[in-house]
Image 1 (cartoon, rainbow, N blue to C red):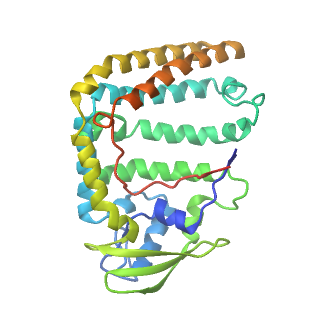
Image 2: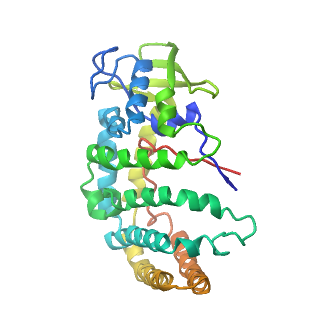
Image 3: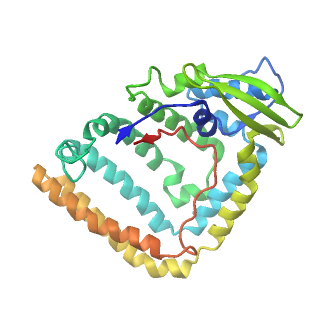
Length: 327
């Protein structure tokens, strides 16, 4: 497996510039102002993202989308079991910390795909690990990591802090690709946007990054913001579906599963304690092997809980830059 961080104009558009706004002045946007024309607006948002400013994605959303994101996050915080939800993120944070402490054993372990494992890619993962650890730390310290944080979710604050941090984290990860000559944020700063054609509420734009193929994307004007057409056309349906799934969560069914789920977490905590205490490769491998059973049990429980009680996926909000994995 080869880890690739190739960034195309379409990826930049859909992953980083998911919501493009329009505002008062077309050619003289001050900080926090969106240009009026769609091509200038995209150029402005890309430029702000290149500076690591995640706030611009929130500012570029239609007001109704902002309300939807806040409402869905807060609803999820009230519908999901707080103890299970909080324990999930706490376990993820602890696992990352323990694996970071024992990373020499991790990258030498055959079970973890180390040098002795067939087709192992330990060298790549070892190089990427510090950046991956920062991403996990950012997420597990964010409002998304607790039910209470979700219940009081504030999109503006989330994008200003967590999203801005994730931009920097993802950029550091993208820099590790030996085939790339620049960083993810540098690619954003170099992206040029040209208006092709359109009407008052629709625009076809060309996006280009030096050294990559020029790509086209259609936008629709929603309220006073320009939104990728595919996203705009599916937004209402996706929000409705997500809200419906959240409302359908059956607390009684979840309560039946809860003792077993918490028992699995207890088992995982015990395994992490053993991994943390490991002083040799053999001890580490034995402890890691012991983690397989509780993890499989947790996955099987998740599949068997049924659609009525399973946690639904969050709606498509401005997605973070992603590092695609190529075979």
